[in-house]
Length: 109
Image (cartoon, rainbow, N blue to C red; front, side, top):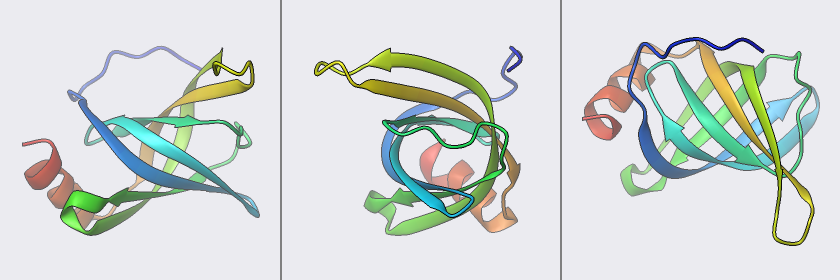
């Protein structure tokens, strides 16, 4: 996983998300987002080398984004109960023009 300087500012959010990795679905939460990526918190780890299909629910806007993403950073920590938890830095590798416009106009404004 490489460290890169961010090109776009991120906004703190709390959006439910589902990551589809192979034949597995993993529930998580998007904690911050930009036009090019997001930070996703989860308690199960997807395959780090697979392209993820990421379903991001924006409940306040009644909107669902579906993007393809690649994990570029992994931080591991533990919940209060001692179970592992993960923060995944992802970069969007395929996002529709409609989703980019929505994100820019409604979330990142």
